[in-house]
Structure formats: structure tokens, C-alpha cells
Length: 353
Image (tube, rainbow, N blue to C red; front, side, top):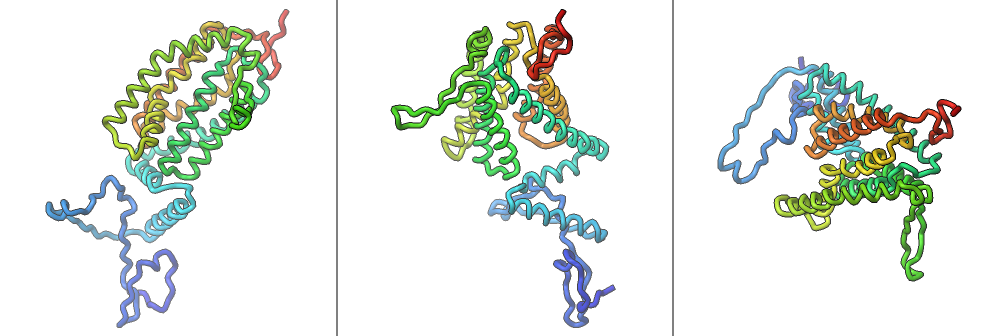
């Protein structure tokens, strides 16, 4: 039945009202529902499509008012988040695609484990900070892996900046980058010096607990072996990217090549610590609590790799971490921990006789 035009209509449906000037009533609500229409299902209109002809279909059906209100409010919320730099259209479409293409039961499980992922992230973060804040010895720990991981985080952060990523993701990665800088200061001696008395420069030196033990020799040996495979792979991938892919600038090519190398060959950077464990026949020096949380998060990432649309390189990087953690677990099994040895907090499970 027609609705009198003099009576107010609650937003957001007032945007779709049509007034009949003769009867002073509102006509039926017409809501163009393209909420579930994704960008990859759209056809770009240009001169070519005009010549070839384009099939156009229109389907009319009734829709519950509450569904339309929920969709309009969701789109409004995404617009506000995008204006504040907290999200973008691609993330909103990824969320829609997840609802469209995922089984409801599987989606419910994914929502539950995503909460677990957040909890494990917080626990791993707290454990990592606790380990490095109280760690006084680099014996058995790979300082080169820490430096290399810090460099990789810098590359990823610059890549995100260059690709107009949302501020929320930039903040998260920026915070992680600051933590990596802090870990470098704990693993090495960082000094600020002036070259020729003018140019400021950061000098990084080894700590005594690292350089005066066999750890440094094992770390250098592992890095040398891995460089034989890493440098040719990175160089070959960079050349492939330059020849077969399009880049906005030389800077974008360098960043994309480095990021691609991190995703494809990043597992190589985790191998020096495995080699040190092998040569020392011990894993007691590792922060196992933090590694356990990260391993649980890796299992959850495996589930997300099948649910959320993501680049193939990123999906492969998730499974490569599984292999590395399995090797860590195998080393923990074959290199039994001496329970009389104190851990990083000065605690020994058993007293030596």
C-alpha cells in the first residue's frame, strides 16, 4: 500500500523512496541490490564492448527489509573504514567472497580458529619479548638470521607502502618492524658513529657470547653454504620478473623482486639456526614457548590458505614454514634437553647431582 509522503521514513531506506506528486505518497521501494557483485565478475565498458554487444539482464524480486538495511549499513561501514585508511575495497570483497564460496560449517570453524590465531599471536608476542628482554647470551643462536629477518621485514614494509596498503596493516607491520630492530639491538652491539666525523652511520658488532664461541663459526659456515643456492635463485627470479612482468618503475621492480624472493626462498633464511642446532647437538638455547605459539599459528594459516583468496607465493610460504617447524620438532626429539641446565630465565627443572 502507498505510504503517505508526509510521514518520515527511517534511514537508510529514505534514499530509495520515490514521491508521487499527485497523490503525495511514496511508491514501492526499489533497492538496486549489487551487494554480492564482485569486481572480477564485472565487464569493463569501452569501445570494443559497444561494437560486440553486451547482454544485459534485470531480475526483480522481493526482499526483506532487514536484509537490505544490513547490506546498506555494511557498505556504509566499509566506506567509513576506507576513508580512515583502515580498510580498502579489496578486503571488503575478500570478505564477501569468503561468505559466498565457503561452506557455512567450514566458515564457522574458520571464524573460531581465527580467534585462536589472535590469541596465539598475542602469546607469541609476549613470549618473544620476554625471551629477548632477559636473554644475556647469544650462544647457540643465529645472529645472522636475526639480521636477515630484520632486512626482510624492511623490504615487506616498503612493498606495502608502495602498494597503497591500508593503514591498519601498515601499523601492524610497522610495529613488527620496530620489534625486529629491538631484537637486533639485543642480539648484537649497535653503535651510532660518524664516518669522517660528518656522516652518521650505524655500526653493528658481535656480542662476546656469540663471537667467542663456536656459534659464530657455525653461523658463518651455514650462511656460506646457503648463499650458494640463495644468490642464484634471487638473481634468476629478478631477471624473470624484469622480462615477463610489468613494473611502474625500477624501484617497484627491485621491491617486487625482493619480496618475491622472500616469499619463495625465505625458508632458506631459517636454515642457519637448524645447522647450528645440528652442529651443537642441542636445542636447549631456543625460545620453545614462542616457537610453539608460532607453530600453532602456522597450522591455522594452513586452514586460511584454503579459505581466503591470496597470492600463490604467499600460500606457498605458509606451507614452507610447516616443513621448517617439523624439522625443529625432529631436532628437539633427537637432541634431548638437559633438564639440569638453566633456561633463559635462570630456571632448571632438575637439580644436578
